Structure formats: C-alpha cells, structure tokens
Image (cartoon, rainbow, N blue to C red; front, top):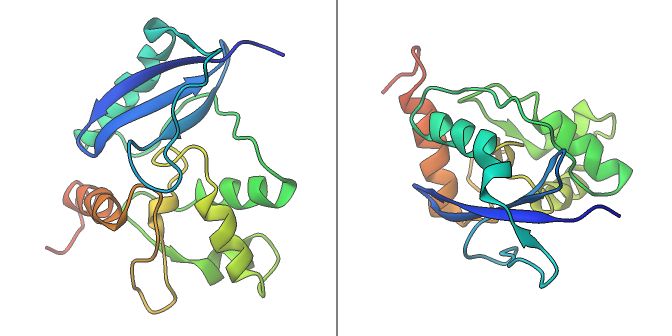
Length: 165
C-alpha cells in the first residue's frame, strides 16, 4: 500500500483538501458538507506533489481551463467508476440529468443509483458531478452545498463564449 499525501488549495468555494499518492489524485474534499473529509493521522503533508493540481484548479477558477489533465484514481465500485467516467464526458458549461447519465452507462432505469454514485464522487470539480441536475432542470444535492454548485455552474457559463447571459 502506498503512502497517502495531502495538501490544501484555497479556492473561491472554500479550502479544498487534496489527497493522493505520488502518482495520482484520489480525493478532493470540500471544507463543509456531509462528505467533508479531514486528513487521516497517517497522511503526510506534501504541498509540492500537488502543484500541478493547484495550477489546473487556479486556471479552472480563472475561467481559462475547461478540461482537466490530471492522473486520477477515484476509488469506488465498478458501477460508481462507470458513472464517474460518464461524468467526465459532460462538456464544460453543460448539464445532464441523472437519467441522461443512467442511459449513458447502459442502465436507463438506474437514475437513483446514478444519483448515489454521483454523491460518492471523490473528485468533485475535476470529475464534474456539479454538472448533473434533476430531470426538470432543478439543482439537486451537492457535496459542497447548493451554493457551491450554483457558483461552479455560473463560473462555467460566464466563461463560455456562446453563453446567453
């Protein structure tokens, strides 16, 4: 088992906990909410390992980066990993419903299971679970809170050349 390292990134949506090993990012945690995490006692703080992640997050929040290029290793069930892979296909500044994602993973009746997998996403922002909305276009739960979800969606809309504002 490899060691787990961590660092923090001060973002416009709060202080994000970043964690991973020396080869991949495995966790981004919001500072508050039901899924908020703290470093485990055996994790080691290594700020320098996360410089590429921090640079890309800074570019994203500045509206300059629309697609992350990071080595990720989200840990979950096969179904969760399928859902998270589908989330990565949602284009910047666009949204999809839970039903859309269920259809994309070949389980059109599994929108609730998709919602559960979406809620377990260990790499929010980078794996854009904030782009998943309810079937009627309503914003639904988000690990960082609905205000954070609104902020991320508004940020993306504001930096899209063809957005209608």
